[in-house]
Length: 271
Ligand SMILES: NC(=O)c1ccc[n+]([C@@H]2O[C@H](COP(=O)([O-])OP(=O)(O)OC[C@H]3O[C@@H](n4cnc5c(N)ncnc54)[C@H](O)[C@@H]3O)[C@@H](O)[C@H]2O)c1
Image 1 (cartoon, protein in one colour):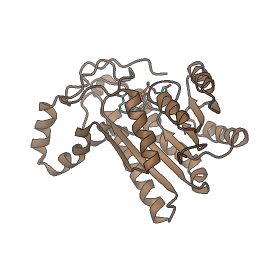
Image 2 (tube, rainbow, N blue to C red; image 1 turned 30 degrees about the vertical axis):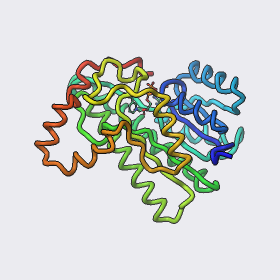
Image 3 (cartoon, rainbow, N blue to C red; image 1 turned 90 degrees about the vertical axis):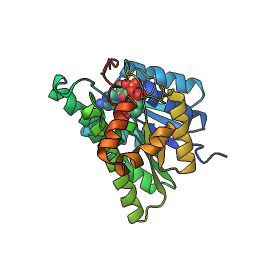
Image 4 (cartoon, rainbow, N blue to C red; image 1 turned 90 degrees about the horizontal axis):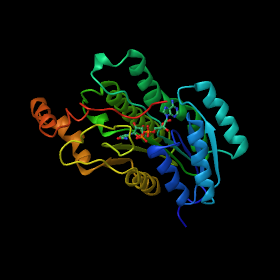
């Protein structure tokens, strides 16, 4: 039997995109689902689809920037279903464009959703994971968390922070002896969800499919992997970035088209 069977998985930003497919994949592995998002109607549709497959699934409207609401939803989840075993910090936003053309409100919202959101969710739900037999924390970061991203400065840096946060929590849990809680950080390049509509993926890469990344996430939880770096070039990126002289890594970012990938970003509606 899969070690995921009957585990209770909370996914943020699960109404659509990668979060929705991750929820579907954990459901297929026999898990119970707790799905959350700010988009009430889409969330209800996703819940109905999951329940139609015979999955036990509850849905809660939850803005990951709202700490009071997180506490309230935690109580509701404990009352309705019990403690969770796996937390997937997936919700995220991006506002592309030259730094000065994007409003401060949008830059700040990016940090609040992408960085403070996972921190607040972890603060609320880590006790569930520590109390359980085996807990798992997953952070959907980004390959942009290893590099500088022109026209995406607040987005990329919000993901640098997530990577640092995930690594620190992982080290702290080990240091405290909580060997039953694993941490996985997921760093993909562009995924075909609409969030990065208009971008041109760097040379040697193409848009990833949400199902590909969702499968990697489920596999990482099953096998207790620390990193999901996709595609292959991302496995080399941190090494190249920190070992090559800066002019060489700058040259490679230009030559591979990473620096112009966001030039024509249009994205999709952010709620
Ligand atoms: N799409 C990509 O190319 C790509 C690449 C690397 C990493 N990621 C990351 O993957 C994650 C999912 O991205 P996606 O492509 O599915 O995006 P998406 O826009 O399709 O879905 C994001 C979901 O998050 C929800 N959300 C937004 N703000 C929220 C908030 N404050 N509270 C709760 N939910 C909120 C949205 O309603 C939406 O359902 C994000 O963290 C993103 O940064 C995406």
